[in-house]
Image (tube, rainbow over all chains, first blue to last red):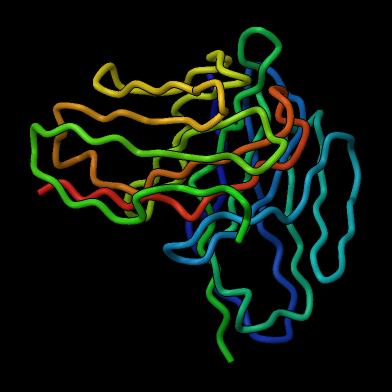
Length: 113
Length: 114
């Protein structure tokens, strides 16, 4: 089966740091994505991890541990515009060498002044 | 503009009806994914096509069907609509079938079933 877990909601303060965790159990694993989605809008790509370790991209970093089925997204120097849902997604195996991209339910992050 | 075009943006219809949602992938992308997002829910994977062929299937109801045409645009057909089918339907595209590339999402089609 496939299961992706992340906290439903988080709150953080402007200028601070927040870590959003994601754990997954899938029949196959070929990479993990993080997407940002503002309410009513399309998800936009933040990061992609396929190997263990930390990927840093500006204020956002993403970490992956394949042995633990665990990832986190780290957001630094939080800004009000970072208030959004953050979606963890795992690239699983479909058939004919295709892949299913399975999303978690998302973490709604609220930034307070 | 992400380059992925979805029409219509909004659609209101009644239970029992049938609707068709359309998606044009980003130029150069051969793979199309369909997702359903109900209110305050995550993205539920429905189905994936690559260059006209079905490549992966998720929790797509039998009342729903999709296809990808030779010009690579895709259509998602929803029939015998129920209230619970009200949702945002997103299409995403990528260059390859393996999803190794980033998925680029369209703006979505918001379906309301009354």
